[in-house]
Image (cartoon, rainbow, N blue to C red; front, side, top):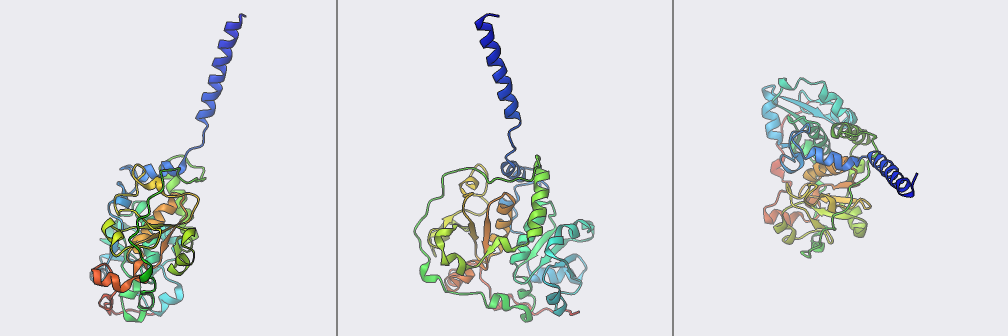
Length: 328
C-alpha cells in the first residue's frame, strides 16, 4: 500500500469516527423544550408565554359560573384552611396532584376550571404548568381567596407596602449578552417528553423553590439577576429595583429574542405588579432549567402608593367581593 493511500484511508477513518461521535452528542434539552413550547406543535398549540399568559379569572366570574354549574373549582390550600372556609362546590387538591386531578376531568363538562389559593401566587404558578400541558380552560383566580371574602383577605391586606419606594430608580441596566441555555438531564429527547418530565418535577417540588420575598431580594441585590417584567415606559417611571433589567411582556421571552440573555449561573428574580404574572413566568423559566423565582406580591409589596397613583394594578378593598363560603 502506498503512503498516499494509507493516509487517505486514515483520514476517512477519522472522519467516520468524528461523525459517529457527533451523532451521539447529548441533546440540548432546554433548547429543544423552549423551541417546542414556542411552536404550534406544543400542547398549548402556540407560544403561550408570549400570547395568553397570564390566565387569570376574577372572583366575580368564578361566582357567576359557579351559580350555573359551568366551572370546576380546585382549591389547593392546606386541608385545614379549606375546611375552615371554601367556595361551594370546590374540591381540595394538593399542588403535587394538580395535573393528575385535571387529567381525570371531562373538560367538556365545564366552560372553565379555576385554581384557587390564598392570594393568587401559588395558583398562578400551578396554572402556568397546566396551561403549558394544553389545558386551555384552566385559570388562576385573581387575588385568590383574599378576593372572595374579607375572612380570607389577610394575605393581601398585610403584604401591600411602600417599604422600598425610595430605593426604586430610573437608571437603566443592560441585558446580558446572549449565552447558553440551562442544562437539563431528564434523559428524554423530544419536546413533549421533556415537557412531561419537567412538569412532573416542578409539581413534586411545589411552589417554594419558585418564590422569594422582597426582603430577601433587597437584603442581597447583587445575588440576583432581577427581571422587571412590565413595559419599558414604567421601567423608567415609576422606576424599578436597582439593577433590574427590563423584559417586555409578550415579546422578550423567546429563544431568538431575549431568552438566552438570562443567566444560567445565577438565581433569577422576576417581578410584576402583583406577583401573579411573575409566578406564571417563573414556572415557565423553571421548566427550562433556569433558577427562576417569582417576587411575592410584586411591586404592590414595595411601592404600593406610587402604583396606585399611577393607575397600575393594585390590591384594593373593592377587590373583596364578600361572597358566601362553606365550611367542613
